[in-house]
Length: 268
Ligand code: A2P
Image 1 (cartoon, protein in one colour):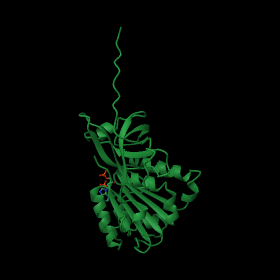
Image 2 (cartoon, rainbow, N blue to C red):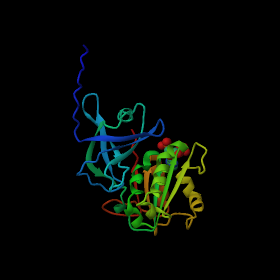
Image 3 (cartoon, rainbow, N blue to C red):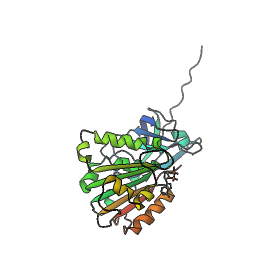
Image 4 (cartoon, helix red, strand yellow):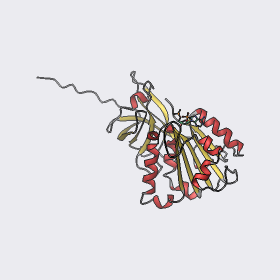
């Protein structure tokens, strides 16, 4: 007779259950999990999430919440780094598994850190689109601004799929679709692949190409009416800061709203 060993179920601190996992490329995936009833957050904020390491210690990283604040569940969009301490494991999670989620949301990519304006620009590279996946699905975004422009740049077209599908679903959404129509302008581009729009965000802003392609008024950002949110790699964030400051936009914070805010995308 074979003996079935019952594995003890580890009880994680602040455990949440994974409800859905979707892989896009060998470098990118998204997953959804249950949301603690007490968790309130502002769209654009991040939390610490993770798993237990081999020694039973929590291994946590900052992850932007990609779902909007009205969603019953939470969504995250992640990179997979083969030898990354957390993502090398996290990429193998499946529905039903548990993750750790510390329910203390923080961050500066929130609408409250910006002064009122007319146009709101979201600038993201790679997984930096995650906080904007939340903000793009938040009705508040469209109540506060007349136009919302989502610029997202990745190396290859397959890396844009998460954002593309999200915008498509948003446009077809029976509730938010109407709000978004004509207001949300999506501008994806690639830098190392054949795609309808090419080039780095910084280049497409400097050349005025994005203004021409989308039929926007003007050919540069105007501190009187334009607001920006930046999320990507460190180099991208620094270049964007220089560019936005050059246009006369100042950096805002929760305590002192201004014309733009910036945050580094999660990197393992
Ligand atoms: P590029 O291919 O020209 O480096 P990564 O995968 O390295 O994080 O990059 C994601 C995207 O961000 C790529 O399309 C990359 O373009 C672009 N990128 C990287 N650094 C910068 C930067 N300093 N300014 C603008 N875009 C950048």
